[in-house]
Length: 423
Image (cartoon, rainbow, N blue to C red; front, side, top):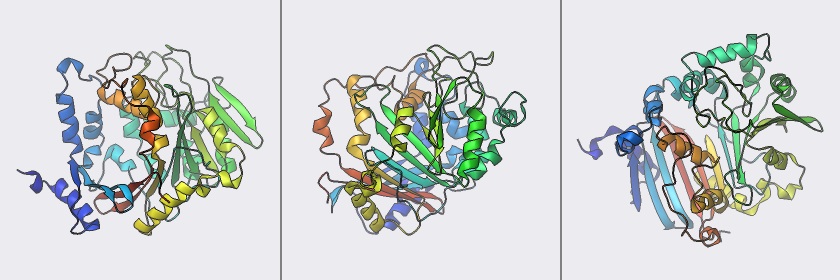
C-alpha cells in the first residue's frame, strides 16, 4: 500500500536507475497519468467540470490507460549541462484501440532534411509506423471528433473512395501506403506576438512524390474553399478560413480542409473548429508537407544558401554532437530546441493574458482539459502583467536536445539544456 510497492513506480525508477547506476538525483518524480487526471478533475467544483468528453475518458476508453506510469530524474547545473533529465514511460503491451497507433520504429538517421531552414524555433524528427497508425486511428477519430459515432472513421474513408460526387480517393493506398516512416515537425512564430503567431509544419517523406502529389490534387481540386497556388513544379493548396460563427459538419478532412454545415453539427463553433484552420498543404522536396499557415510553408520552400540551413547552424551542431555522445546507435526520436525561441510566444501570451484564446497547440490542449463545457475560451489562470520582459528571461534559456528509444515495457527519453554560452 505504499508508492515503493507500486509496480509502475518500480518499473519507471528501475529504468532510469539502469541508465545512471548509483546516481543520486537532485529531483526524482513520478506520475500515474489516470490517477493524476482524476485528482485534477475532482479538484474542480462540480459545476465547473467539463460535461462533454474529457481527457480522462480518452485514457479510459481508448486504451491510453496502458501508460501506467511516467517518472524520472532531473539534475541542474551538472557537468556542462544546465538541466539534465532522464524519463521512463511505463506502458507495457498489448495495446488496445487508439493506443495501437503508438508504434515507433528504430532508426539511425536524424539529421535535418536538406531543406530545413536555419531560423526556426525547434526541430523534431521521429519514426512512426505510419500505415499502422492510420489503420488504428478509427477509434480515436470516433472519440475526438464532435458528433462522431462508432464507425464514423470507416464511413468517412469509404465515402472518400465511393461517393460519386467526391474525390474518389483511396486514402490508404494512394497516400498513406506511399509515405515513409519518418515524421519531422518544425515550429516557429511571427512577430509581433499575437494569438495567431505560432507556426507549425509537419513533413513526411514519400516513396513516390508524383503519385502522392496527384492524390492530394485529386482531393482538393474541386473544393471551392481551397485556394490553389502554383510555385514552379509544386502546387500548394491553402485553406480559406470560414467566416466567424460558421458551424462545420463532421466528416473526414485533410488538414486544413473546410467543412460544410449539416444537421448533425449543432454544437459550438469552438468545439468543431479545425485543428489547423489556416493550413497549407503541398508535396515538395520529396515530402508531404502540412503547415499551419501558408506563410510558414513559403518560408520552408524558398531557395536558400546552404549556410542558411539548420544542419549548418552552430547551436544545432553542438546539440547534435552532445546527443551523439549520449544516444545508442538506434533511437526512435530526436528533438532540437532553441528553448528561448520555442518558449517566447507562450511566455508573451501569458504575460498579455491572451493564452486561452490563442491558436497555439498548448492553448488548445489546456482549453480542452480545463474548459467546463462553456462557449468561448477559459479565463486565464495566471495574471502575467507583472512578469518581466522576455529579454530578461531568454538569456537563461539555452539550446536543448532529447532522444528517445524503445524499451521492452514502453519508452525511455534522455536529454538536456545547455548554457547560452555553450561552445
